[in-house]
Image 1 (tube, rainbow, N blue to C red):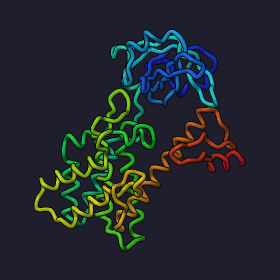
Image 2 (cartoon, rainbow, N blue to C red; image 1 turned 135 degrees about the vertical axis):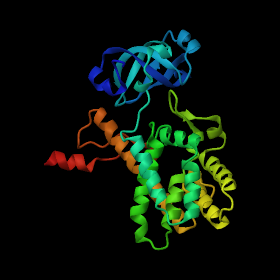
Image 3 (cartoon, one colour; image 1 turned 90 degrees about the vertical axis):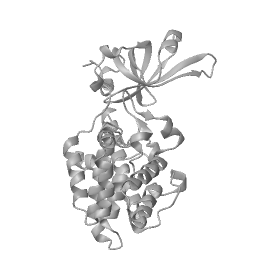
Image 4 (cartoon, one colour; image 1 turned 45 degrees about the vertical axis):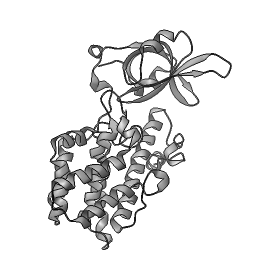
Length: 327
């Protein structure tokens, strides 16, 4: 196990450290006053650390590429309120030098328990056709393996191994708790949409040494990928009711809620509307938790707001920590 993690940065402020990271981003940029510098993001399982290299970076640029393991040496310092590393040396690291478990964040929940719970909800469907459809995905060995390990995003909510399963399971729980208040909603149909809405992410993302987008993910995106996967599975379990296929497909296509958020359709059915709302809420709450954790790592107190959260266009405030501090 490596000695220095990104989360250790506050304890090593103004110190020079040497450690191993995944090179998540690596760019040569122009300086305003002339010349160039390297801008990078170093990542391990505890987070990401911006890094800059001002001089003598030609050798590093020649041999380092995004997504590779690197050995980095540099000084930890604050810049505009955030920690970063001023790189002095940077080289690729062989896989024999590193332990992969140090680099990718992993869900804090038990994957087997989550998987069993998710399948249990599907086994209790009263609609046998929707049950056959969802199990056609969950019983597919290749899909199941990816579903259990994939992150839900590259950087935002649930960006860790097992994040997709964690997100979906939490969403299913919220759907089942909410559906009884809305008699217009078919619970089996809603849960089917929750389980399948992000299924395309298992092909949109990669997650071996770092998180990123596959070529298919960049060119097609998880919504269109999921639509195609649904059509493929339906053909394999015919006869399948056309009406149900259409309604599930609509939930997949509309779950982002707005055209500007990537949905080719707006939610038009009770199930699609509720799925979009609850999916958005579940993602935002995890983003909020991430922001609170980051604020704690930065040494911020309970009376301070978080840094600006770009995806939510605001800073956030931990009311529970604030009340606890008052007590």
